[in-house]
Length: 81
Image 1 (cartoon, helix red, strand yellow):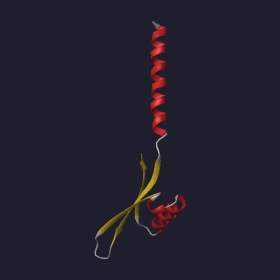
Image 2: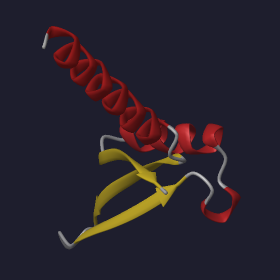
Image 3: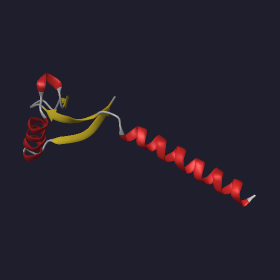
Image 4: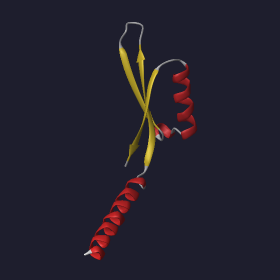
């Protein structure tokens, strides 16, 4: 009885680790959404992701830092395949 229970627990653990490793293998890219407000108080949002119009990771980081320095509301996320 103990041997079967141990095998079930170890099998469940192996399956759980296998499923989590599959999730880590997804191809994810960074995205940022900037909320801009014009002079009339109208809000606009602009979302950019690494790879959009050949945007590199370094350019993306500069983009995020620039708008954060200006005090804009910016939210970062990841988009996965």
